[in-house]
Amino acid sequence: MNKPELLIFDINETLLNLDPLASAINEALDSKHAFSLWFRTLLHYSLVETLTGNYEDFSAIGKATLKMTMQKFDKNLSEDTVDSILGNIKKLPAHDDVKEGLKLLKDAGVKLVALSNSNENLLKEQLQFAGIASYFDAIMSVEVVASYKPDASPYKAVLGKMSASAESTMMVAAHGWDILGAKRAGLRTAFVAREGHAIYPLDGAPELIGKTILEVAQTILKN
Image (cartoon, rainbow, N blue to C red; front, side, top):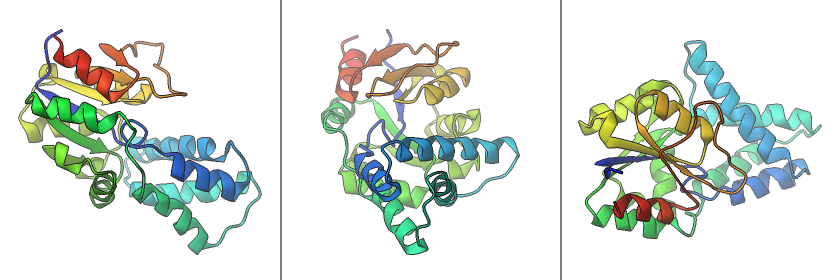
């Protein structure tokens, strides 16, 4: 495997541990399934916005879809409570393997970019809180193209900003849909096999798979 010159990282779940947010939502809606349903609904409606030619801020979609999820569980939370729950997304720790993996790649001279569906201000706040912002050569939100991953335009926007080719760039993500989107945009891909996540069986196979960011980094650098 030829070492990629540029790595693009998904953020939520791939690098950051969503447990604090998941716990807050599950507790508020009194169900261990609430967070999972909300997150799927959030992704679903972000794609609805993109497919219908519209763009709303990811945080606004998150709030709207949490209200939809509240109805599923017959809960009526106040606006302040909803805002407080969703505020946990600003205070997510990095997974234990992340800092060491990013440092290995950074020290080896690989360019690193953070790419998220979240808006740029929130994304920067998340990375600063987690203590990993300094590892990235660029921090980008899909808001620059007003289109959500896995549409091709966010991946291509990173290539344009970094003056990189798709062939020399690898997308690193814990979501099968993100891997598929990057792959179909022509990028190389690495899947981080976080617990509960799977590769899409229909043409979604990545170039490499690792259980952690550290394992992905070690595999890339040993070649």
